[in-house]
Length: 283
Image (tube, rainbow, N blue to C red; front, side):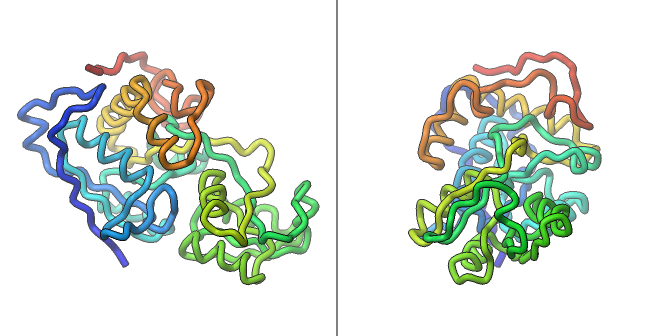
């Protein structure tokens, strides 16, 4: 079910807020989409609506821009087509920046590193290497790089792909024994393990560190750059790191993306990257 969240601007200023002008205040609400079943990034709140790292992050981005924001929850597999169709201005969903995606979308720089990690049912022997996956069924969230990894390696490792519309369903497939392991992002696997005693975080695929960035249509460079500058200000004043600690349980180090302001606009060395030097206007 889709949920709409109209996030009102907060009255109390936070560190790093750029004072909005009257023209910004007159602009319509920003529209973004998120997978509302991807805890702890975005998931249902007991009080109604959706909560999580992504929700807090982009409500604050909008507030600093002097804009309201409408966040719509939908299946991840439909978010990028909906963005390209003009339904959203950008996606609030954590989106892995791959070269293929960067050839068709514009991304902000990463605000978190993501790595591909497997989760297994408690009592299952630990995964030591990819060879331990041979002949096994792997569950994933549909339309993600995790699905792509299983597809790309299915023949080599004789894998069976089980793709689900939501990450909780993919985890349940492991707990119920329908899948040997679930493949997802490291933050999501660790969070699922912290909430589900029968599920544990296990093997991290080597060499799979990527930016988790914010995608825009390719005709939205000005808005991409504006949002990126706000995120950079939030990195500088520690806001992104504090949100990360709140939702993921540990304070990110100085070498983590929550604390790194990358040069230019977008993830360096990928399509859509703009190397133009800039200094974000933070106050």
